[in-house]
Length: 106
DNA sequence: GTCGTGACTAGCC
DNA sequence: CGGCTAGCCACGA
Image 1 (cartoon, rainbow, N blue to C red):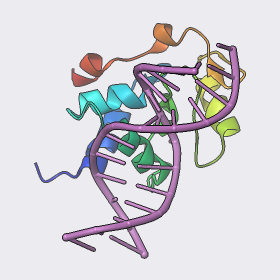
Image 2: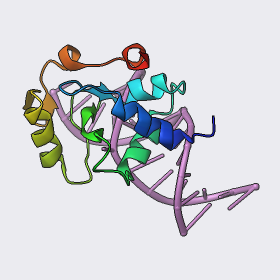
Image 3: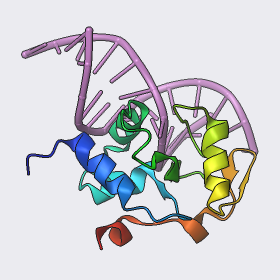
């Protein structure tokens, strides 16, 4: 319980399987702070563990990939490498890959 | 203690 | 469709 919110965010990132994605909103729900999606994005934007945390698997609820420290292009590249289809900065069939809050709990 | 910030979202026009 | 607005919250200065 000594974990800060940001540490939990990183921990949640680690639970996203390769080839899947989740949204900022789902992450917030998973962390029991339904309305803290803004904070989630804020924290990932300041991600200091870039190499260790697969935060590229977190996208917007609209399907757009959103931002990335190394640029959206790299984010897209990484997603594609995991078999996720991206077109025009948007994930095709998001629901197909989406991991929901409940699924992160297991 | 307060304030600005942002890798967001939902709602309205 | 699209653009704009308001709401939201952890974190650092």
